[in-house]
Amino acid sequence: KRNTLAGPPDRTGTKKCPTCGETKQKTEFGVDVNRKDGLAGRCKPCDYAGIAQWRKDNPAKANAISARRRARKLKATPSWEDKRKTLWYYDESQRVSTETGVVHHVDHMVPLNHWSVRGLHWHMNFDVIPGAENSSKNNRFWSGDGWSDWSDYYKEFYEEFVQLKEYALWLKSLTN
Image (cartoon, rainbow, N blue to C red; front, side, top):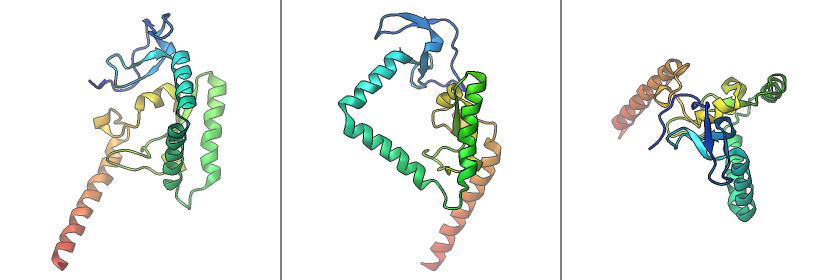
C-alpha cells in the first residue's frame, strides 16, 4: 500500500540494506512513498550503483526517460520566461547547498507532470527547498496530496477553471 505520510519520513534509528547487508542509519536511505516506512529498500550507495548499472544495461530506455523529461520541461517553458530569473533559482539552490551543507533543489511548486494539473517551468513556479523534502514531495500537489500551504490559492483558480469549462461546454451545446 502507498505510504500516506505527509512530508519527509522519520529518519531516526537504523535499517538494514538487503543488497550490501550492512545496518546503516536511516539517513543513508532515500525516500520511497510506496514503501510502508517511507524509505527506499536499499541504501543510497547501493541504489546509485544499481541505477548506474541499469542505465549501463539499458541505454536506450535510460535515454528515452531523460529525453521525455527534457521535452516535458521544454514544452512547459513559456516563450516569455526570463531565463536570468530561472538561472537565479538554480544558482541560489547551489549557494544554499554550499552554505548549509544540505543539498537543496529547485522545486516546481505545481508539478510539470501531474494527473490533474500541468505546471510551467518558469520562475514564479520555483522554490528552493531541501532535497529530502523535494524527493518526499514526489510529484504531489494540493492538500489531498499532503501539501496544503498554498492549496487554497490554487483550488480557487481550479474551481473557476472548472466553472468556465462547464460554461464553455454549455455554450457549445447551444450551437449544436
